[in-house]
Amino acid sequence: MLFFLIFILLVIIVTIFLNTYPHFGKKYSKDKMESFNALDHYKNGKFINQIPTSMSMDFKTNISMLRDFVKKNTNRTPKAGIPMERIDVSFFHSKNNDSKVTWFGHSALFIRIDGKNILIDPMFGNAPTPFPQFGGKRYSGGLPIEINELPKIDAVILSHDHYDHLDYGTIKKIKHKVDRFIVPLGVGSHLMSWGVPIERISEHNWWDEFKFDQLTLACTPARHFSGRSLTDRNNTLWCSWVIIGEDTKIYFSGDSGYAPHFKEIGGKYGPFDLALMECGQYDRRWSAIHMLPEETIKAFIDVKGEVLVPIHFGAFTLAFHDWNEPINRVVEAAKEHEVKYSTPKIGETINISKGEYPNSIWWK
Image (tube, rainbow, N blue to C red; front, top):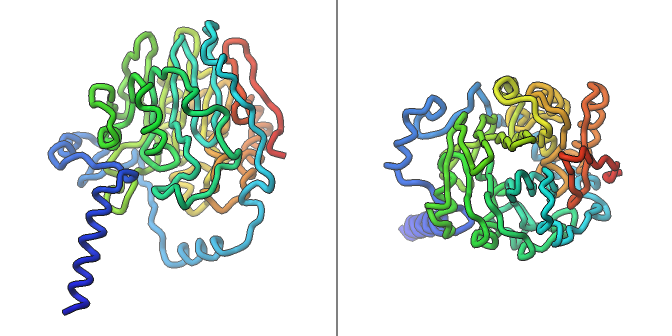
């Protein structure tokens, strides 16, 4: 009897924790979720991918992952940090109207286009986990600029709700200077639970195309999944993004396995002046949801990119490969296929308008 009461008490405590710990975010109500039922890619209360995407882990796979987890690999993180360029605050107040992109590491980016300041997937915390106090440090040791030095942000664009892309601490720190949060379906519920007013959030479905002032934005498919806790797997949508200015077109892949949607996007919106595409945190055991670097090149060709910027590496260790393996492999594949690429250091700016594409081999 005592054991049973202790078990019930533990269940109650865990349930309360899952529903109140702010880092987890919050799901929409059942009534709100029912509004997604008419969508082709929403079945049995969950969002699904365009093509079958298995994420099941059998016993053999789990054993192999456990083996890799305990196996010593001293190159999974950099031995002495990585180079980073500090951003001068005056950079944000320049009257120059060139289209520019600055990488903050992983998938976090600052884009200046047609006079608009846009942040994409601004994960500025130290560790992509619901318990950052127990996490490590990003490879660069910090950010190229302090969060409080960021200018007014016209829009934050999010690809999905995983911790390495949507960070509770970051949103709490920047929300007061953001005019609009532009997100895939369902992600607005997290933001509202963190104090972002509903009128500053717009949610979008795959293939939604809309105006953001003079910019044209399109929420486009990706092959991935979502979730922040034990109870919300695939309750929110994941996506990639198209950003079209007066003279510049940019594609951001979000997280994705290789799939036919890249050709669909290239056919509808390409060519792109710049394609910001994931190349890291992969493994053959989960390649359905994270491209291998060679597939990044195939996807880049599919979307009709002009210049590739490899992202989703260089900040955190979220897979078993060497920390710099993704950039080594994607550059090798790019050369093999005669793909033009840019490899900026964290904090280093690409100027699309002037054709300035940094290309140092900083990871060596």
